[in-house]
Image (cartoon, rainbow, N blue to C red; front, side, top):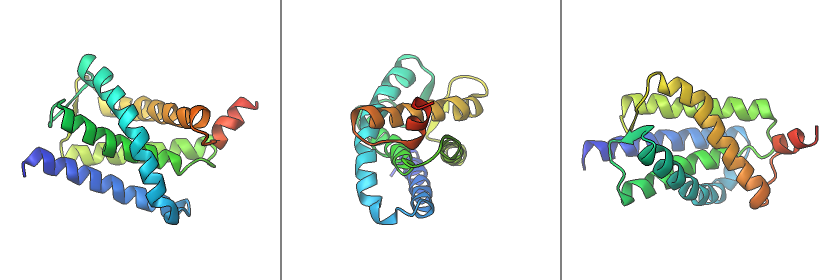
Length: 163
């Protein structure tokens, strides 16, 4: 197996371990298979959209595995799918709690990518900027899709709308 594929597997394993820790923290270990399944489904949709539009066409990042169909689908399912699963763990979270966990998840993605190169940003200071805007923006986008279109209520969205 080539080094880029091994790096991809390591980054996914690190994220999976963090997801299990997060599920334990949220007291949802028994729901892990269901949450992962739903996360992977939404991750495929959102991940393909983000990678094709922002990565490939706008050129904001590149992948060591390239933008082929197989690598895009696997990235969408596992990278974005695990992010979406983290988000689904936080349906009852307040906004601050949601932001803190997404920052932690984003830091783990970026630190693991630093050691196991899977993606590369095409602009300066990207990881920090992306951590603060990209992960939070994508996470709120995913939570909003679930909240309004897929019947998964998020407390922080309800709280923001009721003010």
